[in-house]
Image (cartoon, rainbow, N blue to C red; front, side, top):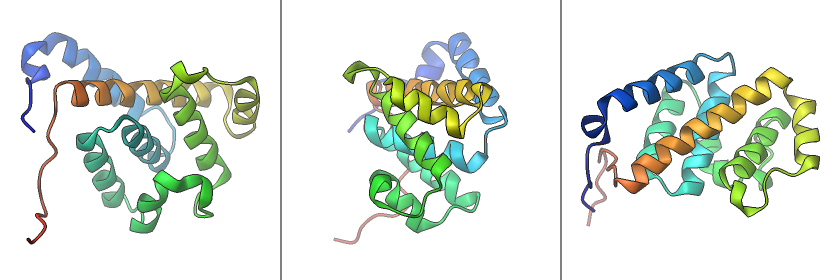
Length: 152
């Protein structure tokens, strides 16, 4: 696979704004571990290998376990995640796949049991932000670094 273009070079002023929102999300007050998990889950859904690689690495650097990272894709069947994390995954999936029926009222009501109004806004912006990065990465074929080649 060959990258299509460098979107930072092609639209530097706009990408500066995208990065500013990214930094604001990272500093919004939600748990860093939770942000790593939802970024990883949205990136899995969107098929962004660059972002899956980056967010799994960043999560490990911040203390996340290998087992939990492996099980993000199967979070519904794993007991390793808290109720708040599980709700964040469900919210992330609904917002990421919003064209498939929106965000149901029952999901919204349940989310308010785990997140304050402000936290739910922050979570939703965080999901929107990673979806923006995923769309840039997939559309322009961003290539993740190769740090471990498989032996033939």
